[in-house]
Image 1 (tube, rainbow, N blue to C red):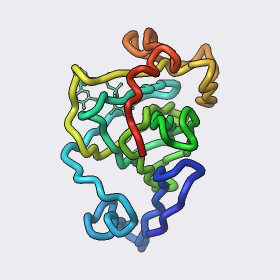
Image 2 (image 1 turned 30 degrees about the vertical axis):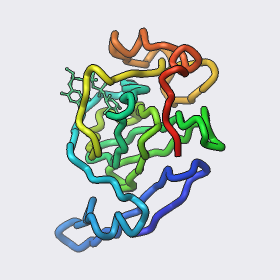
Image 3 (image 1 turned 180 degrees about the vertical axis):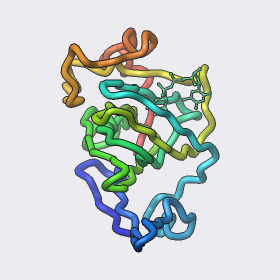
Image 4 (image 1 turned 45 degrees about the vertical axis):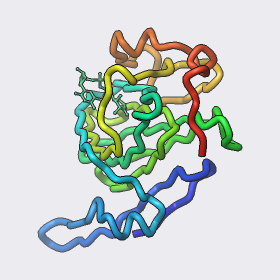
Length: 186
Ligand SMILES: Cc1cn([C@H]2C[C@H](O)[C@@H](COP(=O)(O)OP(=O)(O)O[C@H]3O[C@H](C)C(=O)[C@H](O)[C@H]3O)O2)c(=O)[nH]c1=O
């Protein structure tokens, strides 16, 4: 597998080794030893799957410390634009975001450490997203930033009239309003 560093410290893209043959393909999507060697030393405790239709934007979400989650994400079906926002106050890229296309075709994985907000938009007719978390879901600790925050200015690649947002996500605070929650550090 190949580890691709991004412009944001500790935010990694993983290109797994794919074994193709006339039957189809095989790939490992996680192996504790190899991923630890690559700097992904999270002890994952929960796996999630969500399915969404074209135009859905889920996020931006994070959990308050000590329930913050690192995530290892890939698309089982379709194509998403996956976005991580750096909320770590002592990071040189605090407030910056990074976007990467994850698809069943490119088989890329995205590792987002604790201290980031996460969201994705669905660029295909439907998409099934699978991701590992190194902390359990905590509804009480769940927070968010509104997807169309002016400061972040994220291009979700979805026309405004086609965006499908949950009522909960549509009323999330701005980055500035949420900043008092960002007690994360590298
Ligand atoms: C996240 C989560 C949700 N739920 C329940 C709570 C709700 O009744 C239902 C849907 O939850 P929600 O609308 O928060 O799902 P998403 O909008 O996909 O949220 C996720 O979206 C972004 C992209 C993330 O990275 C997070 O994993 C998570 O916040 O599932 C659970 O039971 N366990 C969980 O871990």
